[in-house]
Length: 389
Image (cartoon, rainbow, N blue to C red; front, top):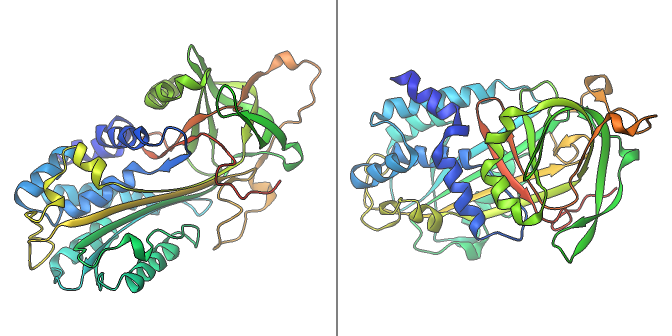
């Protein structure tokens, strides 16, 4: 039985919770860039489940599709996080969760011992009533977890004096392309964000052998990261109005890609995306957790407390070297011999290659063979980009 649940989680491309969460998330973000890690949110909610009892636990367990036995739940995430920790620094996946508990409540020591071991996380008591100090403490923790890349997760105005418990989870990726784009090939190109509006973007370009699929509704391509089984799978609809459909079907159609010689044109982009999830999670059936009658008896010595906020923020920066490769501190860049160089754009017969030109909104996931870690969409590459050519 334990093996069944481990497979169910790790093969999260089949996990309905993470799919549903992202689909609910984008309902209110039609015309914006999005980057999120539904798996990171799932881990945070499962961490709360470890401290929940009664109706609160039942709703969480049903929504997350997790077993009754909390020891099995702990084992699932312990194995997943152990797997992530074994990744090399050239492909660094960071997902972090922490519960910030109003210091008027006392945290059960047994709970923290369990989640530190299995979830690599903890509940921390702080003075949430002091909005300025609390916001600083939370933001400082996030900066430390994400190599100073994710800022401004919580501002003083985001907190209320009567907060009980705030869950903050953040996700960040640093990785290098297996086949890098040459900077000299990057140029300004028009990107159509609608049928009537175009903007100038910094479009990267290379010719190489990549797994790709041409479909009725668009194209899918896989760009792998170096020394890693992680890849970015990009879904490019043939028409902007089909973007939502491509987002829903991306992981399904990515299974049938074949390696071909292709001219890839992809814009540089940078996305910071922050969202508060209580409203979405209520629509997904998790309600008792956010009421004054919620039961967090295994987390707090005074069990009558509610989760006031669940804040998720994710960050990604895509450039010629990879994902956030140029902006993250901590660790030196690998030598050039680490990478395959892109094929020159000169050819006697351009008909030898196919074309993948992301010149209008597209969707993407970042995954390995079993698990999707990030889901996102690029609506306008320049929307919140500070990248220079």
